[in-house]
Length: 479
Ligand code: UDX
Image 1 (cartoon, helix red, strand yellow):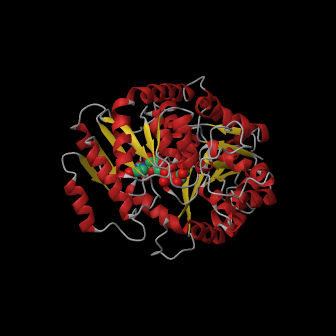
Image 2: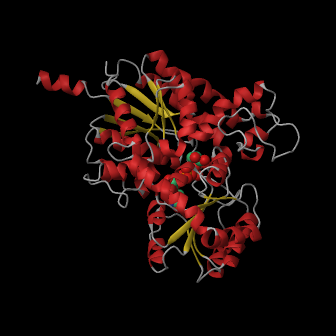
Image 3: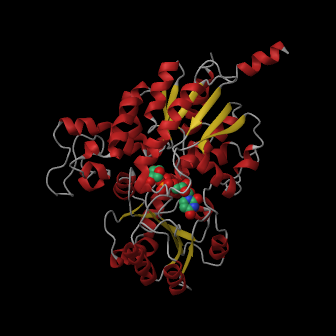
């Protein structure tokens, strides 16, 4: 009995704390599952609001039942239940959550709890978790779920400020940005995150959060990134030159699928959705011919105007290419998508397009009928498209998306970058190009990367090895 107790206390207990967003919940749950499969104890800290949605629309409950060492813990995000929690109020959401999370973490990381925490894995934007961990003597490993290339851009921002490059002077959006090796000659001002374009970037809540984040990374015990060496090697090397304990263990969804294929976890059966997935989209894809459909989705956060929706709708319909389009109910700026407006969009494209409010995206991208992806370049969407070997058209919005879309087009050569343009004739031309004339060029490079992604998560592959090192590192932290 004594021996058993000793063995249990040698098992590391990891507290995972994601940002309250679909994308981060996705990647952190994937990591949680990988750690459970490796025999670690995991507590997943979610907000009440997102936990209710997750339990309603995903199969996490039944999936995680197979891991007795896993548990969910929930806290309030400090907002009233009817708060819209849209991306426009992101700064408010983060600061309101902080007021609840700070005292919670302080207690959780104290010695008095029944199951002491060995280490915390928290989102980079929760800079305060690093401070609390250091104060309490509990190592915190930062998980930055954005693209490594954009994280590297963030880390270079102080140099740009020192050199007087930021804030930008003048409106030359095509001017090249210096001081960000190895992207010199590649990144233009228009490719940098939106707050770099604000004169008062110092008072912007998003940029403040980013600056606090980059200050804390050196104080964290390590850094986890959802990518693989063959995709982001040059940026990972730069990051590692300052933070040697950087673990690139992605693509996480693929890692889970491949590494533990013998377990009852499968790509098709695992969903971490906060919205109800519409599986009629798969039936519709089944009836289309191979590679003929472009999948359109702007992720879980982007809000667009009615005018922008109409530009996309006309561009897609005019291209005559079949499309499957995700229009979230809360995607229209300021209001819910109006029934009548939606009805007109759906009716008007019958025969060419199919519109749903949320799709099982990983299954959609793996479907043979899908030949391309019109995306907002969110990092999960980009990785999911790369692993399925689907070329992209990028229409970036926030955070890392502008950097990613530039690399998709000019560095990896796996798609087109529409950047800040939203015009029906441009959309029509790009869709025709991606699905027709330039298809083979981009398809070839993205299929090569897809192969490399598969290799990276197999035994002997870089992400496989990096995950093992991360698990060993965590095991070595048991006190
Ligand atoms: C946000 C940021 O905007 C992005 O830049 C950053 O990289 C991560 O956080 P988000 O809009 O959530 O991104 O996009 P993304 O990272 O692509 O994640 C969306 C997730 O939702 C993907 O895993 C995708 O598979 C899933 N999804 C999307 C669905 O399951 N169904 C859908 O219909 C649409």
